[in-house]
Length: 226
Ligand code: DX5
Ligand code: ZN
Image (cartoon, rainbow, N blue to C red; front, side, top):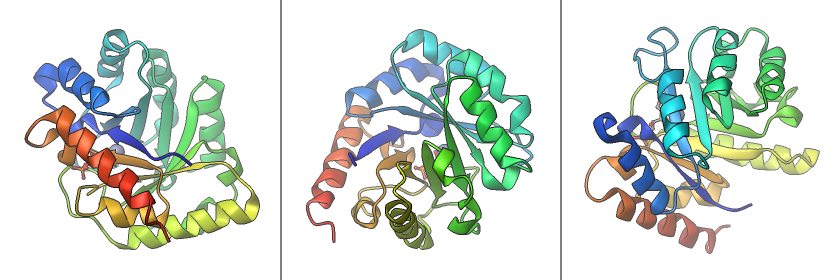
C-alpha cells in the first residue's frame, strides 16, 4: 500500500491555520490530521467542529481526518461529520460500545478508524478489524505534540500487518506520535502506511520543505523494507 503523509495541525500556528495547512499539503501531505481533545480523555483541550468547518470551507477538497481523543464520542460524531470531516477515528479505550460507534461514523458518511493507546494490545480489535478503514497506533501518550516515539509501537504495526494478511482484510495502518526524520525509516519498514506528523512538519523551518523531506525519507525507506 502507498505511503502517505498526514500533517497533524496540532503543531501549526492556529492564527494562520489555513496557510499552514495549505503549505503542508503543498509539500506532499495527502490529508490533514485534526486532533480533537476534550480535557477529560486526555489532559489537553484543542479543536471542536467549528475549526473543522472553517478548514472545510478553506480547503474544500482536502481529506480531513479527525482523531477524537474525547469521552462519549457518540455525542459529537454527528457534529464533526456535519462540519466536513472525511475520516473519524475513535479510541478503543473511550468506547464502551465500539462496534456501535464505528457503525455511527459510517452512517454519517465518514470513513471509520480506531485508535490504540500505547498500553492497549492489538488483539482488543479482533472483532472490528473487518469494519474499519484504518487502525491508528499511538506511538506517544495522546494529548500533546512533540513527544518522544515509543518503540513498542513498531511491534504493534508488525502484528497488524500479519493479521491483515492472514484475514485478507484491507484496513490501512496509521501511526501517530514522534514521527520524524530519525524514526520514519523504522516505522515504514515495520509496515505503517499513513504517517501522522505534527512537530516534524510545523515545529520549525519551512512547512512545505519539512513535509517534502519527511515524505522523501519515508518513501526511500520503503526501498529497503524487509
Ligand atoms: C497527540 C496527537 C498527535 C500529535 C503528534 O496526541 O494525536 O497527532 O499531533 O505530534 P508529533 O508528531 O509532534 O509527535
Ligand atoms: Zn492525532
